[in-house]
Image (tube, rainbow, N blue to C red):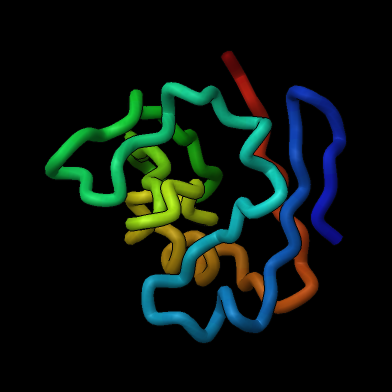
Length: 108
């Protein structure tokens, strides 16, 4: 159940693939219109980062500053945040399983 709730909140389903990958991304495919265009950077963050967003994640003490990279060659947005080392901790903290739904809310 991924979906568009409004321009302030999106719902994203956790899949088995999210849980199996070593870097455990949260897939934001289908939600790229939710994020400002300036938040997208080059595929290689050493070339050009997008404008960083600050993620306030429930259960994670420190805010996460990240952008969203683009795919090499095609220039399409990647379907996950560039910085994602926090995601495994988030999954463990909340005991997330395939089929669970998380909300992403825009605060500003």
